[in-house]
Image (cartoon, rainbow, N blue to C red; front, side, top):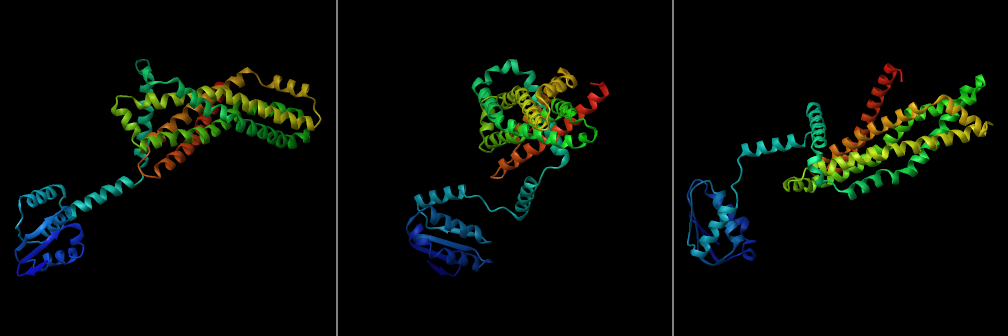
Length: 361
């Protein structure tokens, strides 16, 4: 490379191997005489590749004045023209600031109103999918439903049994302490049974379902969203709400009554063990349970459990399908599903408490 007055001359091959040593000098030479026109002569160049053409375009765009590129044969001229069309122009400072502002707004957490609008919209889309289900039955697969029900139900039974047994024992021990003052330890059976049937059974199972199944739904659908599998389903004309959301909600609601029953039975067994340790026979414990709790208490717990399961599954699916992009999106979706499921369960339980009190149930 030779630098003359207002002119830069290249000779030899202008290829990737030869321009590494002259790149910086060439760019500096193009900026040196900013107030004069620049002529770049490549008539002495034997060959030129894309790297050489990129250098010429960098010099051309880096010089603020007029640039005249001479000496290019037909092949080199065609290559330079192709590279000029491919390489985009450098953005202006205004465009850079605008892009940076948009990126910051996209990375910023959505506001309360936007979050609420997203959740309401998802709930509405789910209702619409349920109404339109008869026309979209072809999107459902029985194997998916069975697999989801197995993961949400059968595989959760050991945890439900252990937690229910321990909760029954804890409630019995803690209730027996004040009851001993009145000689009424036997009434621990009625207290624990009513608590399990009406309140603790469905509530604890919903918490377990939120931690296990809700987070799993969010992680699975979030991964599909990040990998653009959900977008692919939409492109193929398949409704994601019908194919992905409805089977998960139905499976969670289907396994919930069984898990509540398992929780209730395990809790009663734990309570029975404590009362037998205190000297009460099983017949007296069973009689106390039957006399104070009835089918209405048991059915109320099952109904509450199914409502809790629908809320947990819907929140888990919503967190997954509305997940963002990037490596942290799936983890944030799973966290949102667990927190949202537990909060929704407690709120719904409070609503049930008010309704049952007002109705006298």
